[in-house]
Length: 70
Image 1 (cartoon, rainbow, N blue to C red):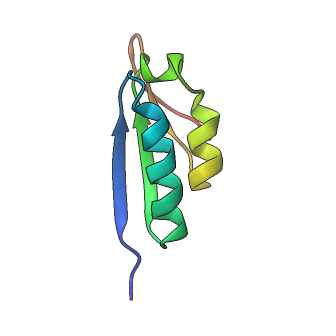
Image 2 (image 1 turned 90 degrees about the vertical axis):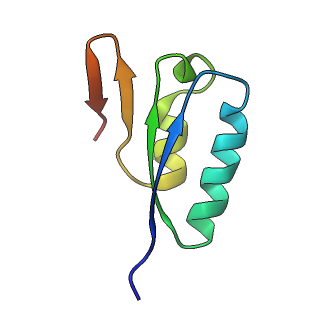
């Protein structure tokens, strides 16, 4: 059976910490999780947090578009 793939959008609010917890739980449950963060979300946590939780590259919003961390 193929693993389910989830894309999680994270914006700038205190709920970003809940998003990190949700990401951790989804990965532990066997889901593939890709995270997209806005600049505002990065004021609360660094993109590296989600990269470490998902073991996948992260897409985050920059002033002039989106960037993919590898």
